[in-house]
Length: 121
Image (cartoon, rainbow, N blue to C red):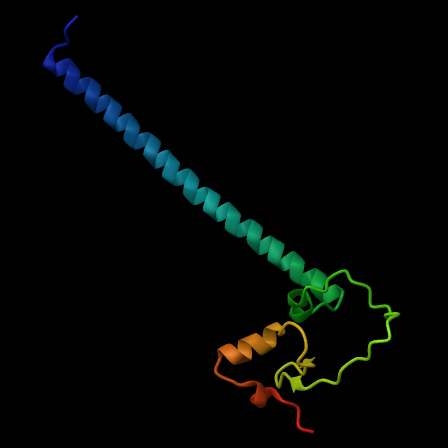
């Protein structure tokens, strides 16, 4: 059952062209998948922005991690500290206690200091 050299070359060539065809299909499917993913992300972002506008939600509120927490008054006797720092762009404030808000981190990363953000007394 030995094959002649012409048959081996023909079989190899057929397999190679089938391989090329399959690889092209894979590349086409990957490109289509990337396109669909981009469309889905765009739709999701539009939906998120619409919901944020409807409910007057800011990016800062989302970044703060306080989503879903009640705004009801606390029953503890702790007093709220006065704000020491303010964002000149958004007007958001921070007492200097706890985790730094995203706007403070961004300002510090851009070269500003906490003194630059301090509210004048």
